[in-house]
Image (cartoon, helix red, strand yellow):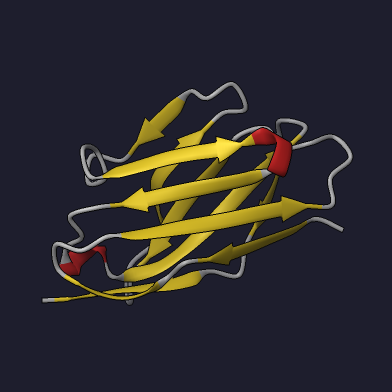
Length: 116
């Protein structure tokens, strides 16, 4: 059974930093692309950043220059380092992992709240 467990969310002041972690397990095929998405109240879920198994990254414009995604393949873990946080970054952040190039699994989400 595939499981993704996120951690690292919390409350931080504007300008502060947080580091999110997502540990994936349960796939005998490993995990292809992994990524972070977020959903603010009343808004659709949106891409934050993704990273392939080989380390190729992709960022939303809102994340470029402030957030860094990384992963440790041996641990099936993906990280999101978030710096210079803004109130508009407040959202539930979800981890996603893809198996065999087409099957997507989601974590339960972790709340990030940035106060002004």
